[in-house]
Image (cartoon, rainbow, N blue to C red; front, top):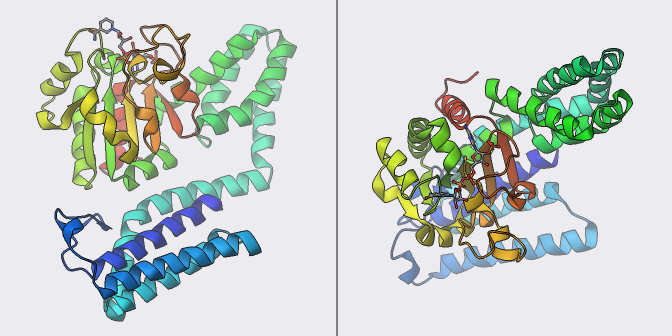
Length: 384
Ligand code: NAP
């Protein structure tokens, strides 16, 4: 239940910061989150500001001691944050009503994400603790051993396709199915490379039909700052108009969306600028690599659409890489990285991209146009 609890904790943290800042009438809110107005940094802290900061400091000190001495966890953190929020509200002279309002405002931005993850998690807990998933996977794969190799391979792909519906996480999917698939393919005499392809294409095909999942939508819904990085795959798939719709849908939700444009993304100079301009994406949202690179550390989601080489961190650190020294978009510094592409294929340079194996990277297999279109449908309420 840790994901649900961490969301609750984040909600409470949002509540606290909301309350802490709500007492300052000059602090505007966007999507329930306080945003610093220009000039705020120059204002001196008054006594209430100082008391609020001390309360926050004391809460964190109590929590750190609790973790180290008594093994506290998310439950205690949530309780502490809640108390801190109420105390801060009272110090800020918000009174009970406005403190409650600030709570609702702070919670609103997380409610959608919390619900999605809560549902997904509930299904997972029941399936996992009841050992239902193991039974389903075994039941699905065991009959295949009776068929000729070719038919079994196709059957495996269909099964992978089916398993990907309830388990949309690429890593979860691999953990769940590969321990069954690999020995099975060994028994059938199927090369392991083919097995990995079956795993990839089964999931990829499923993504064409149902490319979105709770985690992805929750992260996007909760993001404040998204940088979209288009590449050759967006051009091939002609996804620029869908990308425009995605830009509109996210902007409407109050998300700050920008585009990171690498000078050699695509296959000709200015390729991405031309396509995005064709889709009427405001020009001031298209930022060159040098302009956007400093932003990634404060970016919630770097959403890569059909780009590969221009995001490859090996160019920065791996001296043996053929692209070593090429300036890249520092997408790996974002809090979450999402990569939309059809599979694990290399880009123009023909090399692996270590970005895809980072813990914070979510691989979203599918055609760029179809996948982005489905995200838009979900975001605008037309989804399934
Ligand atoms: P890239 O490295 O070529 O990668 C493009 C990625 O798009 C591929 O890995 C591919 O993966 C994915 N893709 C292809 N079709 C797709 C689809 N329909 N939907 C979703 N994804 C799709 O592209 P890049 O990051 O833009 O980098 C450009 C490369 O081209 C650089 O190496 C650059 O040096 C080189 N180049 C640029 C120019 C120029 O002037 N811009 C000229 C010549 C060469 P999947 O197959 O797994 O989907």
